[in-house]
Length: 371
Image (tube, rainbow, N blue to C red; front, side, top):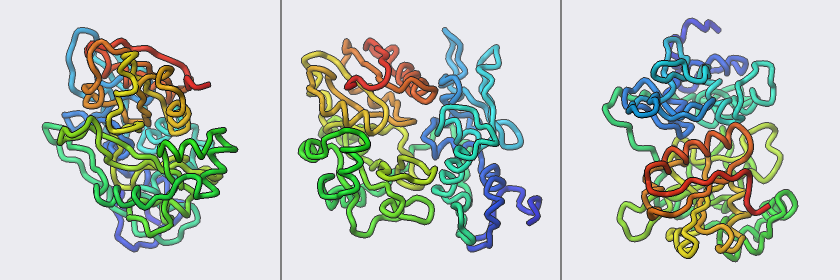
């Protein structure tokens, strides 16, 4: 196949695709499209994003200065680089597949790393930008083009009615043997207690919306059968939060694929896991909010007494949000409990930047408080 025949990476729907060319297609996807799909914030200049997956810095502003541009600048040729005013930043630089690798593993992608390569390919396939392993023919979706807008476009969310229907029809985790076994044996979490508190549910067997898919497979087929709600600020003001999306966790060996997924074609940026829409009630006495990382830690902490962990939110990459923290009263402590790795550091730094200046005290914890 002539690689030079597709200068923009575009291709016709139904075109026969050479499976070996997946990396070329992944590299051809604009960096800003990839950053948006990963839940990163796009700079108002339309040529940058943040935070940097290497150092966690959100903008190029040095102390005492303001700069609305994202920390990472888009370079000619489909690359990005971490910059700051007056310095070269942390030096992180990569193409579109490299950006996905940073977000998935917290490390720079070594091209000989077959495990990371498989994860990158699965991620691009899930978003319709290349073939899943073993595919011979696929309708490839042309990358989205982000305008040079003065303001950042709002994140795309799945249809609210479809989200509600999936959650309404979802059975308890104890009614799905695979989900219950994963909770009990793989994570040491009591499925019956999680079902009682309605913290998570099992994916229903009924037909799923188009966004509940992973490459050419549905979430059920790919093993992503444990679902938890993702919440955002309630625009109507009836409560603090409103369910806006779903997050699916794989409960079986996925062959190097992604362990967790959000709705295909939509962003989870600014959304969190929460015990309830009025999440602050549990922490009112201690004036404490705990923010943890990932589904297992969120479920483990949610089972702990509120006197131990206060109010609770669960974050994933891109969850850090000024709108969420604006709901937290001044004077509260905000404890951020993330994993002791690069990905955890990135999330902790993203939350810290949002907490600063809001009249709350930032506390950094390592790993899960429930251990």
